[in-house]
Amino acid sequence: MNKPSRQLAIAGVLMAVLCWAGNALVARAFAGEIPPFALAFWRWSLALVLILPFVALPLWRQRTALRHAGWRLVVIAAFGIAGYNTFLYSAAQTTAAINITLVNTCIPLMTFIFAGLLLGDWPARRAWWGMALAVSGLLVLICRGDWQTLAGMAFNRGDLIMLLAVLDWALYTVLLRRWSKYLAPIPPLALLGIFMLLGVPMILPLYLYELSTGAQLLATPANLSAIAYTAVFASLVAYLGWNNGVKVLGASTAAMGNYLMPVFTAILGWILLGEALQLFHWFGGAMIFAGLLLATLPKRLQRATA
Image 1 (cartoon, rainbow, N blue to C red):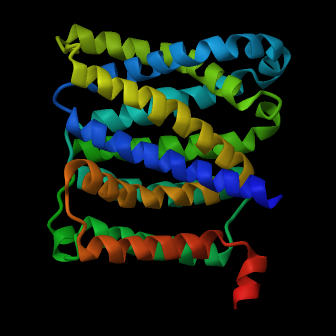
Image 2 (image 1 turned 90 degrees about the vertical axis):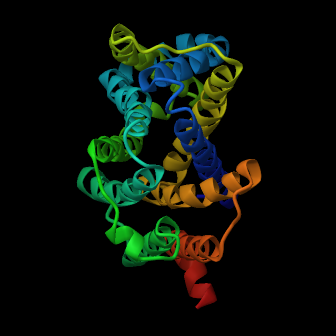
Image 3 (image 1 turned 180 degrees about the horizontal axis):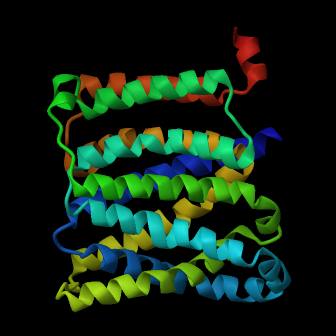
């Protein structure tokens, strides 16, 4: 693997996690304003409208490769487009953000396990140590430096929904890698486009059910801006970066980037909401970065710095 490709892949994963940190802030801020299935449906519908003019012709040209990938595209779209964020938005209605963050720590672990079971790609021992260090740093952030906070946490139905989201995303990430030979001939933008084309109709029945319960989406400037952000940054920009990261780095390595989400969320909260960064933010963030370096640093560089 050449160095520029790896650096670009790492940058893509970091950009994806940064965009999803903003997505988490949007989900929390608009939980009482935008119904969860409405946010998921209109987010992906708008993203599809924006991307379709650029992918329609490439998709037609790649129709042979699309037929060859076949049902695998449907499965990946179900997990990556229809699944994860629909679960996350639903969980945000009934659980606290700290619980969502805690459950999200399971994503790299589940990805490690699925990568081992489905790909035979069990991480090296240093990756497990790196993950343990990153988890410790994340717990420092979650409990705000007070370990008694963890003992007092309560879990509810939203947390179980978030656990489904974690399993969903881990499978999406690993399947991108497992079926990469079927997906490789399709240009990245066109591949994301076909995932959207297949995934949006899967969300529609959930959205129609939500409408039947009386839930409404008011077309206020704030609500429309939130949907626009999730469509452009949390969908188009983030998914392109993440998918390339999985392709180049592997599922397990890319998944480690999820540990940076609370760090980025804290930074965005500081910049956008004026929330002060405390000592535990810096300490926990440093532990997470150290864990990521330990888990992902190439062996040849580790030997050179030993």
